[in-house]
Amino acid sequence: MSSAIQEAILLNNKGTRLVRQCQYDAALQSFTTVIEMLKPLAAIAEDHKDKEDDDNGNADADTDADTESSVPLTISFTNKSMDTDTFDDSNDINDSKTTTTPSPRTSSSSSLDTDLASTLKFGQHFVFRDPVIIPTASIPFASSASLSKFLMIVMYNVALTFHLHALSFASSSSSPTAVGVSSKKKKRKAKKYFAQSKEVYELALKMHLELDDDIDPLFTLALTNNLGLIYRTTKRKDKSTICFQNMFSTMMYLLDTNAYHEQDASTSSNIQECIWDGLLSNAMNILFKHTYEVAAAAA
Image 1 (cartoon, rainbow, N blue to C red):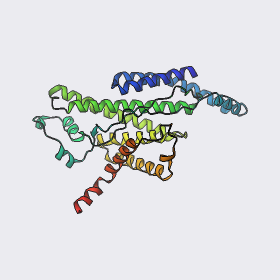
Image 2: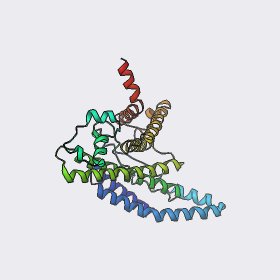
Image 3: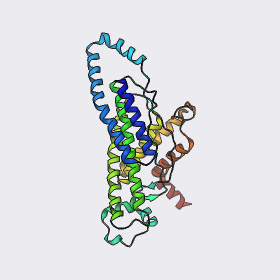
């Protein structure tokens, strides 16, 4: 089984390279193949777990032996694709009125066109763009827990791919040269991929919450941040607020426990300052925007 997991790890990492090259369809094919490979392995692992539970006397010895020959499944980010050149997915009506220039087709546009025009603007919120790679040294014991963690990682990568693909379509549809049928199709695709991204992010978050395993805090922050932005894009401001409240609490906990400063520099948990600032800026702007506006008006 370890050889199959190693093959799945290599295929996942291939998908991450394709994401960085903006080859989103090819990346999705890679991640889909990984999921298809992991499903039967998860079933085998679950059967193995049931047999061990039936034989407690041998279970401990078998588990110890397998654990000694395994390497923990780890998460790694290269942090090469971080930037803030993305969209503001705020659904604030006043912001839309002041920053969005109506096109000559506004009166005859569909609600789809209007929605995208009012929710997508450049350069406001930080999207964590880096997919998760798995070091090739990770050949985990094929337990139910390790495979669940692997599946969670792939689900995150799939959601991120949909997210970035949606942003690419929204960007091209919002350009001055994008008019007519082509622009309308791109906006439809953007909305479709935003919706698919939301569903898969939610699944990844559910799996994340069910895992007892320690998870890289950067992964937790990335997942929560991107899901929060997707909720704002799809006009679920209530859920978006919850995501950023949780993200802000996590960041304050890391600061309070000195975990942000003291983590091993060789791991991705040592969060780069530009990434930390981008995530914190999202939380502050989204959670405390109204407070800032009131204070500015009073001044």
